[in-house]
Amino acid sequence: MQAIILAAGMGKRLHEYTAHNTKCLVSVNGITLIERLLKILELKKLSKITIVTGYEGESLIAFIQSLAIQTPIHFIENPIYFKTNNIYSLSLAKKVLISEDTLLFESDLIFEESLVDLLLDDPRETLALVDKFESWMDGTCMTLNEDDSIKDFIPGKYLSFQDKEGYYKTVNIYKFSRQFSENVYIPFLEAYTKAMGVNEYYESVIKLISCLETKEIKAKRLTGQIWYEIDDIQDLDIARSLFANSAKEHYDLITSRYGGYWRYPKLLDFCYLVNPYYPPVKMMEEIKSNFEALVSQYPSGMQVISLLAAKNFNVKENHVVVGNGAAELIKELLNFFKGRVGLIRPTFEEYPNRYNKSEIIYYEPQNPDFRYDTKDLINFYKQNKNKVETIILINPDNPSGNYINQTELLQFIEWCKEQSIRLVVDESFC
Image (cartoon, rainbow, N blue to C red; front, side, top):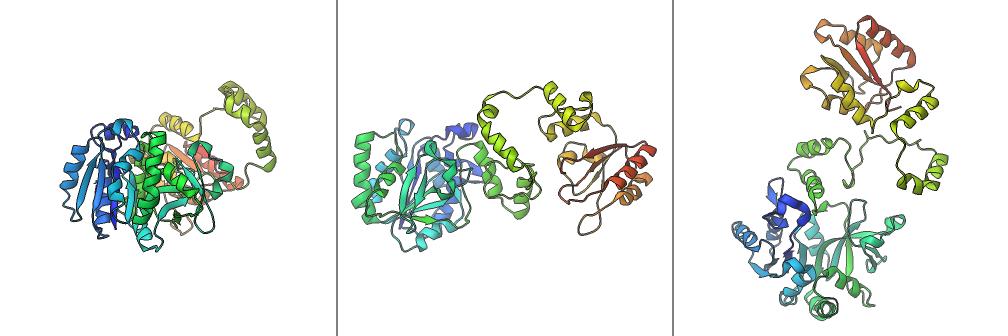
């Protein structure tokens, strides 16, 4: 078994990271993509590794030679990388491809070693590694038959999100048998490039072959293994947390996103604003029926929104402040404060993250459920050493769910008034 790695691309979407480096020389937590890949392949005792280079090829070759990898490594240059796509890079390695069974990789991937083992341990000769489609995935998807044969390829622009449960994403890691490469893939590749040119993708050839009755390419489904494709700076940021060097670093990198989990794979955040009772069915139906207008028309200004809020909540219009989400209002509110602020912890971290840490006095309930009541707060904050100018009470609290009822809350408001303490009550999590 050998490996072929396609590494000729320019990686323009990574901007300054690839201004003077090819994409696979980008580092994730101190190790480049290509070094990580080669060290995984080194453990598999392959006969050789062939790398197709292009953009900044000399720098890439010099770096790889400095790694002291024991598996023989050969390089093939794509001199016209700037006007071709990966179908041309792979065609340059076709003689290598037909020489023996091959593992095929793209160089902008980061993944667990176990992904390679899945292919090597599977007795089927020709496999495409696939994963269940998630919203963070880009590019071509496929649908599969029960026997793991490929039913159809769906380009990204034709994805129907209503059907996403049946989609699988190609990981862009393949196992080709020598016979498959020689008798099927290379003849199709040559015919395809002759008809369509060299500015195409090798996956298009796989799509054609999957339409054959022989169904020689099977899908190998992942079962939770971690991988990520790095195309832009957001992908790089996510990859750094997915492949952190320790559990603590992993935790710190995820929590530092403060809810910015869009595209983050398979993350369930139990502290996030998820309300199982909202919106009600009737409201969802109304939103759906007006979806086009909601998307295409600019929203009302602050004056109109303040007026509507005042009407619905039975308050004065000039008592309503409209913000673009709670975080914006929290930032402005805390910019207004001076002196020490009392907070309960654990809490919604937007507050402590927006204030001077040395000016925060934390009350931390000393019980497994983080429960507290008005009496606990008064006993803690009435001590001179814990004197504060402001107390922020999140009620119900997040993430503990602690709740102070109306009677006790009024008692606490009265006490704060007597102590000349400013009290902020945040009821966002009702």
